[in-house]
Image (tube, rainbow, N blue to C red; front, side):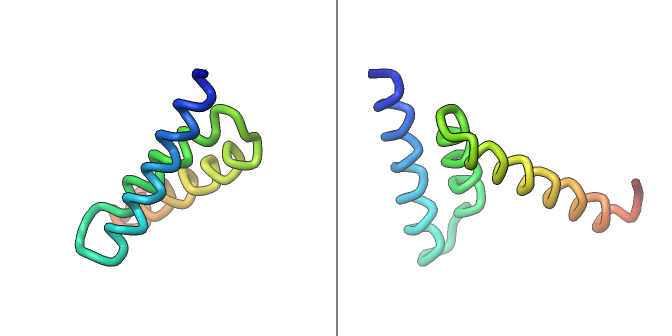
Length: 67
């Protein structure tokens, strides 16, 4: 039951991200939330989440001009 609820919540986040990709809104935040939900049960989602986190961290360092 817990797995179903987590996967349902992840699916809702994906749906919200798609909606907010069309209309102005925080689609990236909802995609990250969906990845977090899916990474609980799926190892490939966990690997993708780590890659996205590294990409965001590197981008923030580049924008700040420090490391």
